[in-house]
Image (cartoon, rainbow over all chains, first blue to last red; front, side, top):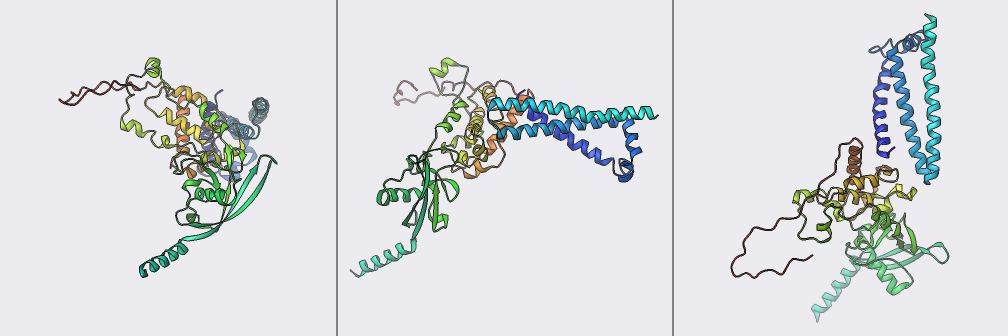
Length: 120
Length: 286
């Protein structure tokens, strides 16, 4: 993948994060959600987990945050390690860790949905 | 006689008023020992003297072993770049009194390999400059190698790259760049600015090739936007701006918004008629 494409992905995910974090925090206000304390209530969270819309939002947010963060880490690592072979190893290692965190992060979202279905 | 005495006295007063004793602390690289040493020289300087004048004075009258690079003495060749009071400057364009300091420190340019004392090695700098193909790339091979006329360019088209063509390759931007300090592979502000200079030139057709060359972590994406390059440029060129404009072009290419640029052709023959009595010019050659 070209460096410009990677940078465009980073800019695009930054934009997504900005919007989705705004929405995520907005849930804890009276305007968009049930308010701060009610929004953090366990049942309220489970309620949201039943909602496919929120699940989609959280998945996109998770993907955006991880992609943006890992591209950033890669850039920092590339400034420390200048050899191309080491840079390839770093990229590969980061992809593996990225996939692990993506699956690990997605698991509670899907697990939450499953649990809610069995509750009902 | 009385007039002469008055004149002499006034000249003495003038000299005293406009001269100053300055201490130069020069950080010198000794290639034999592979180590630094600091030499201190005290020089009486006059108004109008530049750092280069002082260095010439030191070399001629105090220490013949002092090495530095200089050539034109008028800010055109870009040879005498050095770190003066912590900032990369051209020695020939830096007025000593304008520094407003009784002690002036002079060091070789940072981010360059050293040769001796203040002289630095520009090999890598010019290697990077060569990488970006700093010349017009055109598809009309015949016209390119055997030109018949000048390439056409309007004043407006020239304005698009004019300030970037003022670069004298002095390397001050390269020395000031924090990315160059940590990443030896980074192309540097001068090479990147020159890339944009040729892409913006209406006579050039190498846009896509050059974008491929600079679209890398060690290319335009290595820039941290510190703007130190533009701050130190002695010719008022803004390499930071060029890098940002270049980033825009590279991003546009990634979004498939840029196509191959067709360069302007050659100037058509003039239709003006020669007035009577004016002889024919000699045959055109380049």
